[in-house]
Length: 306
Ligand SMILES: Cc1cc2nc3c(=O)[nH]c(=O)nc-3n(C[C@H](O)[C@H](O)[C@H](O)COP(=O)(O)OP(=O)(O)OC[C@H]3O[C@@H](n4cnc5c(N)ncnc54)[C@H](O)[C@@H]3O)c2cc1C
Image 1 (cartoon, rainbow, N blue to C red):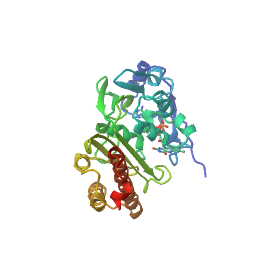
Image 2: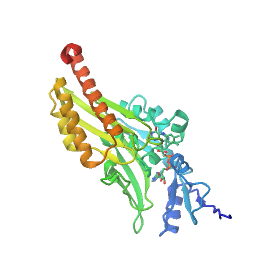
Image 3: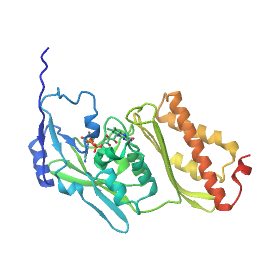
Image 4: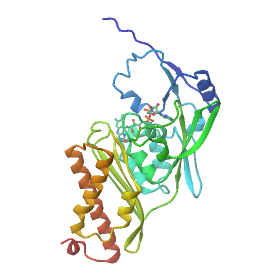
């Protein structure tokens, strides 16, 4: 049977001005932005292209999107900077949890292609990088068409809707990401399963905290379920900050149940495997916090847990 293959129209603007002109010319249609292409190329049925009249804008030649700069307070990366470059450039200054999240993504070769912009704008699944940047209060610059081209900064959490779907104006370009240069007393990251091969059971937990003697004065906690979205809330942060440290082993199950109930409120029907994974992560995190606190005070972890 004859199947018609169509070639998409590909635009390669070399500057933001050319990009703006391309968008203005295609007002009314939604052009497809191409960054590293790793998600796009792995979409089922993307190639051969059976969709007609597809307009692709490749962002690769836009110099401005490859820039990064740094001062004492923050680092700013253009959307086309690869996550490998971010890890290299920020090795000494960026929060450790961010470097760990990047280094836990795919393989080195693929990380060279994955861009920070593409990583935050994936449509089929949510990345751990997006959630780590959320708890670090990173901000993004969006450029989008109203009557004319606008650009505006947003906290990262504001570019997703409550189900974790990207919620930006049609055709919006994420142009920059700004990350504060600060460290935390405690940074925890645990991922299980691959968001690409195993999106329905994979999950990630990320947390940053500041300690004040034997208590937690500040905590941000987030779960990523790649196929469902993000789970973070003030209630979870408050639960962590209200914990008496070190946490008595008799309270582990209570805390795990509280968190799992909270996740279930947002995401009904968690698979049993995923629920087990989430429980295990929470358990390991509390244990890890205890070890940290007890090592500060010089007390014996095993004696306490026994
Ligand atoms: C083999 C493999 C292994 C992987 N392993 C992992 C893993 O372990 N953990 C993980 O989190 N992810 C993993 N990924 C997924 C990877 O994170 C995504 O494919 C990647 O984030 C997409 O980035 P990209 O630059 O390639 O974007 P693209 O694929 O080019 O684009 C992705 C989406 O974002 C849009 N987009 C791109 N840039 C912009 C922009 N600046 N503004 C607005 N929209 C934009 C595109 O239109 C498209 O919809 C893996 C992927 C592959 C292929």
